[in-house]
Structures are given as C-alpha cells and as structure tokens.
Length: 175
Image (cartoon, rainbow, N blue to C red; front, side, top):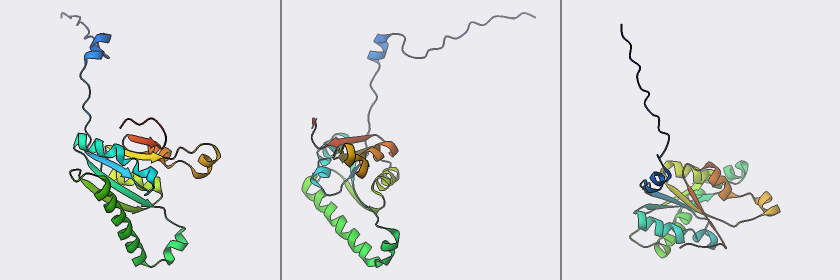
C-alpha cells in the first residue's frame, strides 16, 4: 500500500499585502430604517438636521419616537384609561406637526409614542422596526449633573441593536 503526502493548503487570514487591503472594495452601507427619538426640546430637534439628509441619501424611512417616562406605578393606576389615550393623541399630533414643518414631504416617516423608561423604550422600538441607525442628541452633562441625571444617550449606545449617532449641542457639525 502506497501513501502519498499531501501538500498542506495555505491558510489565508487576510489580504496578501497592505496594498490588497487598501484596494479591497468598500462595504456598502444600507440604511432602510432610521429611528429618531425626540423629547420636543430644541436640542432633540437638532437630530433631524442629520436624520433628514441620511434618509434622503439612502432612501430610508424615519421613525419619530417620543417616549413618556412612567410615573410611579401606584400613581399611574389612579389615572383613568382615557387620559392615556388623550395624552398619546396629543403627542402624536406634536410629532405630526414636526413631520410637516421640519421634514420634506418626499421622506417617508412613521410616528410612535411609547410609555416606558426612555432608553428602554428607544431600544425596544429600534428592535421592533429593525432600525439600521438611531440618531439621538445629548446635552453633554458632565460631573455631578451627569451622575444625578445620567445619560440617556449613553444607555442607548450601550444597549442599542444597531449603530447610534449621537449629536451634541455645541460641537463640530458635519451637515
């Protein structure tokens, strides 16, 4: 019985040279669903300056989201059910007004209102709509105020199922 030694197949772990790595085609970014959380402050509306051009460039749909932070559970149970639906209707109307005044008509937009802790509600909706990107704002609190208030943006970044673009109030803008 005759045995033959087989030549081992070379294992490649990356580009053969640095030039090959530079020449490789770039990945194509596809954005279909962009989530934009809004709290109706001027600062949160700044995220639309980024979200709208992204949506136009990629043909993506924007989802404008407002999350109502729940009050203490015992207090919330005392409110009649119609109050919640009236409150939701009012918030949806505010989001529709923002859509009409701040976003061009050719950009598709969905509107959502949720009752949850803010960052939990944002992450929940991001999963539901299969968001490709979340564009949110931060006030950039530091020190004691950051410790007391916490950072919603930081919690979103830590838990989001997709990339997050955080827009600061006073920093270098690229749009």
